[in-house]
Image 1 (cartoon, rainbow, N blue to C red):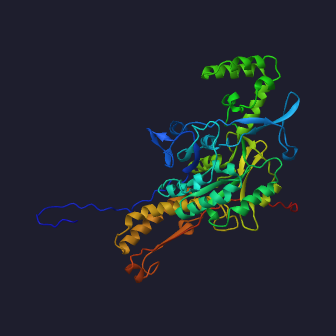
Image 2 (image 1 turned 135 degrees about the vertical axis):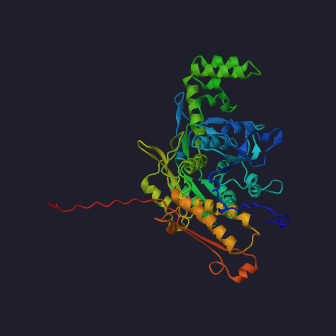
Image 3 (image 1 turned 60 degrees about the horizontal axis):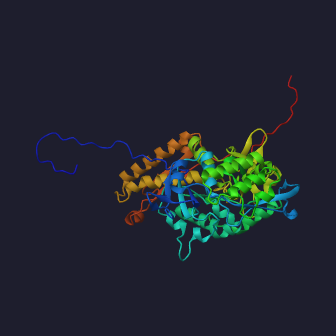
Length: 500
C-alpha cells in the first residue's frame, strides 16, 4: 500500500492470488497480397494499406469483384499437348490474352470456400480502370524507386500469421527468386509468420521433375522452415457458368462468322446495330446466343474451365484456418479434403510423390495434392521446405512453436522493468507453466505427464548469473515436446502357428 498510515482505523488491502494468464495468439490469419478491382474505404485509398476483413462481403465492399479476362481462339500446338475442342469440324483451343491473368479474387473465394475467416488484404494495385488487362510486376511486391516494399509495410502489423501471394505465380519461375525468397526472409525476421507457396502451372507437355527442380533451384536455402509449397494446381468450381459471357471473348473474334448455327449470325447482326448496349441488352444477347448456338456454349465452357484452374495457395490457407479452428494449430493441415475442387490439374501418383516429399539433396519438400477414389481431393503432405530437418520438418511443429513463442512473448511484456528477483521469477514461471499445461491437456504437447511435455526454468543459478542480473537480463528457458504427425504408418503382418 502506497499511503502512509496516520489516522487510526481499519484498512483493507487486496492482493492478487494468482499469476497473470497467457492467451494463445491467433494462428491462422493470412495476409493476401495482390491486385484488386478497387481499394478504398469511406473514400480513402487502401492501396499499400494492410486491411483487416472478416467476411467475403466485406472484401467485395472495399476491394470490388473479379477481373474479366479476355480469351482468343487459336490452332493447337501439337508439342504442348493441349486439350482441344471442335468448331466447324476444326480443332481449336482457347488461349488467354497477355496481361489478362489474375488469380487474386478467385483465390479469396477459394479461401472462404474452404473455411477461411479473418484475413488481411494488401492491395498493390487496382485493375478496375484497366479492362484490357494489366501487367503483373515483381516490383509491385518487392518495391522500386517509386514503389514501397510490401513486406516492410507488413512489419507494422502484428496479427497476420500467414503470407499468401497468388497473383505472383503468373510470372512463373521468375517469382521464386524475386518474391518467394523475400517472403521467407520476412517470415523469419518477424518470427511470427509462415509462407504458403505455389509452383508454376504444369502444362500437359511439362515434365513434373522439371517443374519441381525449377522451384528448388531458385528458392534458395535460407529460412526454409518458414514456408511450405504445394503442387499441382486445382480444377475448381469457383467460377460459375453465369459469370462467363461474350465479353470474355477478344474483340478479334467475329461470332457472326464463327458460329455455324443458322440463327446465330442474325442475333449477332442485331446486337451490332446497337452502338451503346446497356446491361439488359447485353444479358438478352448472351441468353439468345446460348439458346441458339451450342457452339457458343461450348466455347464459354472451355473458357470457364481455364478460369477455374487456380493455384492452390488460397484454398490451402482456408484449410489451415479450418484445421486450426476445429482441431488446433498442432494438428497437421493434411489428409483434409478441399472444397469447391473437382480434381488437381495433374494426377500425381504415389511413386511420383516420393521425390517431391523427400528431397535427398536439399530437403525442399513439396506437398502434393492428390485425388482419391470415393474420398475426394486431399492435401497429401505436411512438410515445410526444410524437409530434412528433424526440428522443422513438419508444418504443424513450426507453426505451433510460433504460437507458443508469440503468446509467451506478449504475456511477459508486462514484466519488463519489474524487479528482477525471486518474486518475479516465480510469477513468470507459474504463468508459463499454466499456459503450457493447458496446451498439454489439449493435445498440443507430447508426454504422459506435464513434466514429460515441458520444462520452464528461470532464476539465479538456473538460467542466470549475478552478472546477468546486473546487466538487467531475465533469462527464461522453455523446453517443449511438440507432437509430430504419423506420416508413415507401417503395419506388420506375420503368420503364427495354430495354438490349439
